[in-house]
Amino acid sequence: MFWKRTLSVLALGFLLLAALAAETAPEPGTAAVPEAIGNFIQGLNENSYGLARNWISPDFNLPQVPSEVREPVFKQLFAQWPVKITSYSVTDVKKGAGYTDYTLQAKLGARDMQIIFTLDKKGRVQECSLFSLQAAATGSKQIPVTYAEIPIEMYKGVILCDGEVDGVKGKFLLDTGAPTLVLNSPPQSDSSRVVLSLSAGAGGASPGMDVRQVKVAKWGGGTKLDFSAITMDLSHLANPDSLNFLGIIGMDMLEPYETHIDVKNLRLYLYALDAEGNYIDPQVSHKFRKKVAFTMDMHLPTFKIKLGKLKVLVGLDTGASSNTLPVQLFEPLKDLYESTAADSALGIGSEYFEVKTAVLRHCEIAGENYPGMSFAFVDNPTLSGVEVLKAEGLLGSPFYTRQRIALNYRKKLLGIF
Image (cartoon, rainbow, N blue to C red; front, side, top):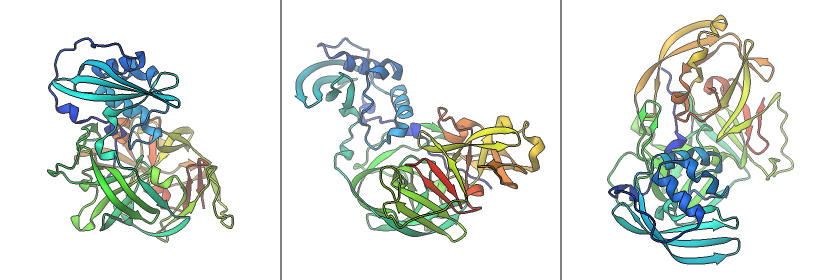
């Protein structure tokens, strides 16, 4: 049985406790505000990111959201904003070096609250306190390593490694298809948690996303101290419960390193990089048999492969236990099939759906054929949970288990040994 872990970056939209306020008819603002703030509020009220887009600074700060996925997060955030800001007026203005803070007294539905907007020197919105969660108020300190050799294990076609969160030991899933660290947190009643959002992902609605304060998180790639982590119920990805599944190690935790995945020897090697993607240790040197330049499709490394005469853009996803292609290619590629079958996939809503699979006799990567690899044919929205991804398919464990590979985000280079 094939199953694919899907982390919908759309689910990272920051919906606050203001979502609980009752919605009322809009009223005009009681005081003039800068044009950028007015358009930002109008975009929220009309659930239209397009109305606010040109008034948002490229340096806008969304807590916990990597810059690579900011655009789709904004789109979902505005589309799902649940309550009207019915009145607002400026109560205070503070100018700093290159920025200006505006404090507004506002009414969100039936609730009165204070909102602080920060505008950059061009008058665009750079920060908004609506999205600055109280749970994310503390700073964090990350202690990386310069080199690490980490034992791994394969579980249902994905990579697991040891880790620890606030003294609790368990397993992390290594996932280059996820943008950031996400902790597993089954649903529970806990007043210290903040529910952020619900979203429609593969197979149905995804669990609510929370914020949890973490004192210490450890894995082979280093230690992170005093930070707020995104959490959601990921327990359907790793059963039985005895596995003690801690969560997902995503792109942002791997980006400081050249990450070598050696499934044959069940090892993960991390080599610290400088800003240009060169090894910090000058004595480190590797000779790759093949090199593949990739581009970033939001958080996903993507490159083209050849299936017969057809070129297809795919993403490298270590969280995928199967290679995937769009269902529209099932018939056009039939001359390449060694065999076909029907299988099942697990969506983010813990529901299974049927997919077609085929073993291909030709799959060319960096000029080399990889015969006998199986692909599951799925709808693109089901594949990614995000329609804005350009990648048509994924290369998962059937690819990276064949040989040792190295992933360097800073040089945008995939090395094949």
